Structures are given as C-alpha cells and as structure tokens.
Length: 325
Image 1: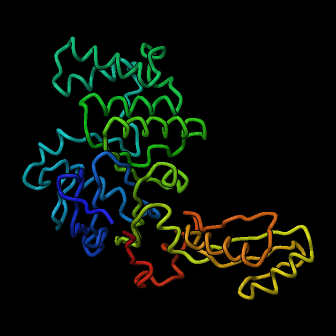
Image 2: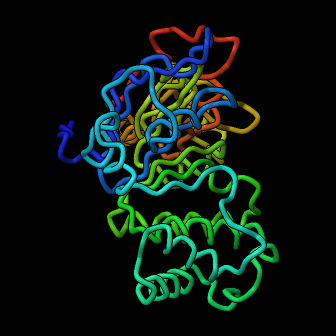
Image 3: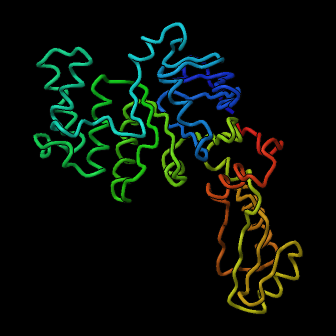
C-alpha cells in the first residue's frame, strides 16, 4: 500500500457536505485525487456528482468540509484555486455565433493574455485539437465532437494543471468519444490532473486511475477499476474440455466446481487474482489434467454500479461502504 501525502494531492476533500433545504446532496464525503491522474466520479442522476464539481471548482460553496485544490484552501484562497483549474461543464461554453478562433481569442482576453501571446496560444491549441481547418468557421457549424474539442481547448488557454470534466462525452458518437479519450490521456501524460464525472462506465474503466461511486450523497465505494470489480461476487474461472473422459475426471476431482455437462465445462468460483489462478493451474498439473480452454470471468463496472446503487440493496451495508486501498 502506498501512502499519498498532501504534497502529492491535486484535490483533497474531507467531510464535504452540501444540502439544499432539507435535501442533503453530499453527506460528508472524502475524496483524494493524486496529481497527474484521472479520477472518475460515478453515480446515478441526482447522486451529487455535478454538485461536487461545482463546489471543488469554486462555483458554489460547501456547507462543511476541509477542501484543498491545487494546494490551496478552497474557502480561504478561491482566486488561487481558480488560477490553477479549468472547467468543462455538461453544457458547452462555446459561442456558436462566432468562429472557433474567435472563441479561443475571447478566452485569451479573459485570461488577460497579451494580444500576440493570445493569438499564439489559440493557434497552438486549435492545431493540437485538429481544429485549424475549421478555425474561421462559425462554431454553430461544428459537429458535437468538434464543439467538445473546442470547449476543452478553450479550457486549456489558461494552462490549468487541474481540469474538471463534467460528463465530457455525453451525446457524442463512439468515434468522437474515443477521440476525446485520447485527448484526456494526452493531458494526463503532460502532468495534468483530470477530475471526471461520467455515466459511461466503459469510459471510467478505460481512463480512470481511481474511481469513486456516489450514491444518495455518500461514497458507496472507491478504488481502482479492478479493485471495485472484486467487491462484487460472481467471478469465476471456466475450464472447457473437448474430451468427455477428461471432463468427467476433472469434475470428479474438483468437487467445488459447477459442472456443465452439455458444454463440457467446469466453473470454479474465483476473484481472478494471480494467486488463485496459479493454484488452479498447479492443481491441473498435479492431477495430470489438461483443459483445452481456461477463461477468467470477473464482474465488470456495470455489475459494480448496479450492485452499489441499486434501490433493492441496503445503501448502508458494510460492503457497499467499503473502501478499497
């Protein structure tokens, strides 16, 4: 287990709480986001994801919590926090009535960049996001993916080291979504920290170093994608045989396995860890049994999400509140 110090944290939130009247939106959650990583916050609609982003990006205030972003106290140094971050919300900040280049230059003016520097930064970012050819066209003519790329390019004008992306690929087609993933990976490779909210579980699985699942204003679980998958039962190793005699011998020797006579396969409960796989392979060698196919099945993030946020499950169970380290 590695220890994360405050110096290596881009975002630190302890006891974050927010309520609107008698409706508690965030109920004392803790979030630690290491510098230069992607942190994904998952949860159903109304779970509090966007509220968390708005608080950490200084758009609204928290009711309680010890909150630091970019090494700055959120309550005492909001201007310093704003200088360190960029925000791309659910809804595009692009002005469709002006060109892509004009949108970029407007952001440069808002950041008080000198004219020459503003034009240089705008040109570099338009090129980086493959928007140079469309730079002189009204942004209203852009596709959804192009507008999203322009939106993020505008966010980067101020060279933020921490970027909040609130559902950045919602409504995009699969190709545009994959292009956005590539952009996010490049940002992180440059040392930028990305705080991502998404409803696409595949997106979190692809991008995030750490994932937190928010449900009813509380953290249901937090960990890497693989750690979260191990929280949910149902993982198994499947051994398939082509020779019926070998299959019957294996089934007789391995009593804890669930047999499938029609498919000539055995299903062994397993979390898919290296130690468990090694034990199964050692057993096969010792028994002199050779399976024709071995596959590992582990729960995916869909299983995790539905298990941790299902209304049919107690939301306060020990398992659903477990934090993986």
